[in-house]
Image (cartoon, rainbow, N blue to C red; front, side, top):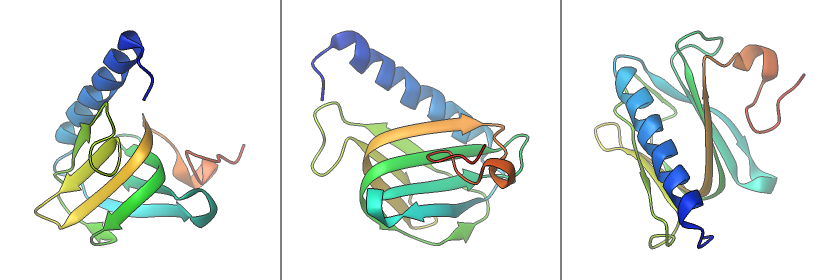
Length: 125
């Protein structure tokens, strides 16, 4: 992890904002969208694939992934470990659903049209 305190603060704020967005969509379901084996990249969507009011989360360098492929009323919470945690920098979990994913990189977007772009990680123009 870079030792730049400003960058770490930005990453913490990004996870806090992601958690607010996830909480605001707690009545929506979540589902796996995409997994790219060559980059260990995992994407999931909360809400409709076409948007609006959806949330797409992309995690790269995924080291652990478990749980259902789709479930209603997600309660996903994200955590950031600046020093890398035991296995990864990011952990997203929904204990009620049995969902968990750990990865070293995280990005996300709201109101994203997955049908048009297919992926947040490698979007189709």
